[in-house]
Image (tube, rainbow, N blue to C red; front, side):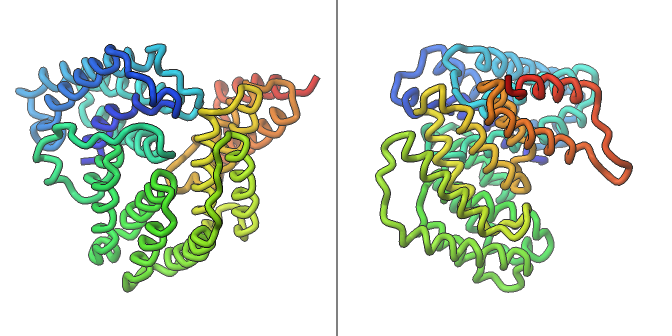
Length: 385
C-alpha cells in the first residue's frame, strides 16, 4: 500500500497542529468546514487507495482524479489560511511540502503516470507522523469515520494511520503488537525497528511518560533473536529512562525553564554518543526536542534563532530515525531570523556541512546550481557585520 492511505488521512489533523495558545481558541468555521470537506474527499478515495488494482482500472480514473484534484485544492487553500501561523519553520516546511507534493501527484495522474503519482504520495507520508508526534500539541481525533477498511490494513500502516490522526492509544497498542511479531522481526527487522521507534516517539514526546517508555523498552528486550545493534540501543535507552524516572518532577512553567532543561538534556545526550551517529542519546534528544517545540510556541521573537538552533541539533542527531533533512530547515530559519549574528554564522556552518555531506558520494561532491545559489544567499546573511 506504500503508506498512501496513511498520508491522505494524515492531512486531516495536520492543520490542527497549532501552538498551545492557539489550541485554546475556537477554531474558525472555515477550518471546521475544511476538515469536513477533507474527510468527505478522503472517504471517496479510500476504496481505491486500498485496492491497488481498482486504482489502476480505467473505469475508476475519473473519480480518482476528481477527488485527488479536490484534495490538492483543499490542501492549498488550508496551507494559505492566515490561521496557520505555526511560528515553527519545521511545520511550515512540512505543510508547504505536502501541498506541493499533492499537486505533483495530481499532475502525474493527469499525465497518465498513475504509479508515479502513488510513489510521490508515498515519499511524503513521513512528514505527517513526525509532525503529529513532536509534542502534546493538538487534539486527538477519536472518531473520524474511517470505516472498517482500516482494520484490514497491515499492522504498521494501521499504527501509522492512528498516529497520524493523533489516536495515540490505538497507535501505541498496534505498535506493541508489532513488537511481539517474531516473524516480522526475523524477516523484516528494519520494519520492526520502525514500529519500535514510533512507539518510543509517542511515549517520550507525546505522552512524556518514562514508566510507559520503560515498559516498551523492556518489551523490546524481551524478544528473542533481537539483532545485536538493536539490543545495544535498547539497553542504552533503558539506562536513560531509569534516570528519567528518578528525576524530581520539574515545574517547567516558562519558556526559559524549558529552554534551560532542553540545553541540559542536549549536553547529556552528546556525552553519551561515542560518534555522531551513535543512537545512545536518542531518548534524550527526543525529550529535548519536545521541550524546544513547547518553548517555540511560548517564546519571544528574539529567542527564536537560538531555539531553531537547538531543535536543529536534535533533528540532526535523529535524522536516521526518519527526520531526513528537517534539521536543515531549522538551521536555515535560524540564519534568516537572526542575520549577521554569531548564532547565524554557527547555524550556517552546520547547514553548509549538512548540504555538502548530502551531495557527496564515491564520485565526489556535486552540488546543483540552485542549491549552490541558496548556500551563497545564506552565507551572505550569516556573515557578521
